[in-house]
Length: 248
View 1 (tube, one colour):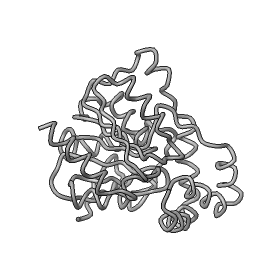
View 2 (cartoon, one colour):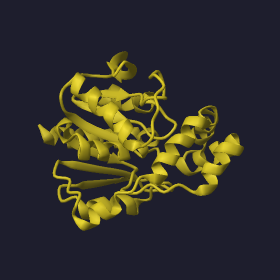
View 3 (cartoon, one colour):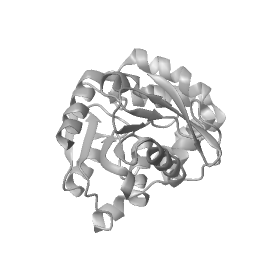
């Protein structure tokens, strides 16, 4: 893997590059491109640090569409169009990219995400007042693996401010009625991946997509929680590889 930097609107946007593949990965709340290291090594592609995350510059972000703008610009610069893989918040960004910049989307992979991403008000309040306690709560929900939960509890506590911003944006994200009414129709190949034990974006969220995206196929990974690409990387990578190979 190597780190690369793109200039987008005078901002430095950082990415990690794996094997040459037209795939771009978008991390979830409070995370960064390193979330996808196992996918970059095995499957290939690029993982982006959203603005305010990882090695990317700070930027004023007011809603999910702002993140979508930077990722879409990065995709255009890198390869024109790509398979967009988004986890949780990143899945919301991926949906917005499809709506606002459809030409950059070859296919979608929506991982542990939803058409609506409500957040417990208690978590948002705690992130402001007691960040370490909030970080523990988020990690507990995010992992079925206790060791990984402990590790990310420390990471989330250090990034409490950006985690709170990300979760606030998630809380406002809502495309549910757009899917239900048929206003939003996704007509690119779509893979849905969800952990069987996902407590943050339960399996029913992916089932909703399956019922409203005609081309969608769904893979539920056993004994995995919300951070499925970390907890069960081999199973995740197998599903992603199979999907990408069928696109060619």
